[in-house]
Image 1 (cartoon, helix red, strand yellow):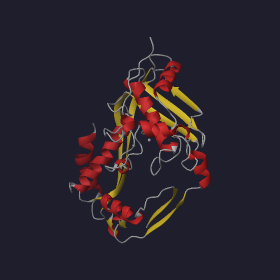
Image 2 (cartoon, rainbow, N blue to C red):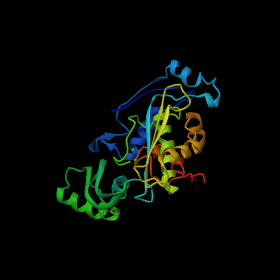
Image 3 (cartoon, one colour):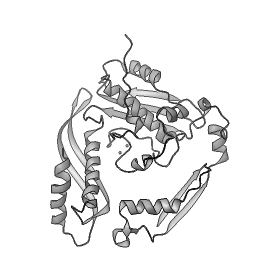
Image 4 (cartoon, rainbow, N blue to C red):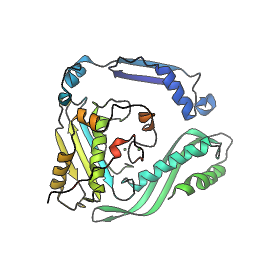
Length: 305
């Protein structure tokens, strides 16, 4: 069974059941033998209208000016970046994400036909703390948990994973390195700062590191429901900043607009198509080399002379 719950405000006529079945089929859940039969499973849909009180507080039932549209929820959002990989993401996250993608690849191309759709990965890396910057020393542990056919042996699983998944790679939150505000990213419109707020602070943190202002950077922002501007913006460069954190914070505030409506405009979050948001549902929201992930675009920041 697949259950779809939530509250939305929309005039669109959406065939939720078809979307669910198409996605389950695309993932590989095509029979009861693999855990779910996309064509015959029960799909329970219970989508209700969003509270009119929330709509009134956030956008006044679409009567507020764009700059007056408030946050759709309260909470803290965190953005993180580090110079240990070209993606400006933690190496642990990059490796675990690539292993997950490779596991899907060998299942779909039948290199490892015994692999089933469900699985997860974890990578532990030994680091050296270099005055606040994190320097990878070695990969300590690689864990892969995957659903598999009943007939395959443990030896075959270990051998195939080492040869076809781990070897080609060793070599989407931040792999456990950064804080998390607690809200889910997927299934939310841009007024829900759980997602849009997290996107803009990732762009801010990545821009700080890419601009050479710090080797690591955490940006935190907090919101109150119905209020357009954030309650606070905080920066921590873990003592790796080339200039004081307060100056980096000033640069961030000058170059990034944290109001929900302007985040949506500047990151083009209302644009759909090209399976844009479907792509965020697997392999993470951050560190992706894809033009649809607009929050990964770097703004070069220059300190004032």
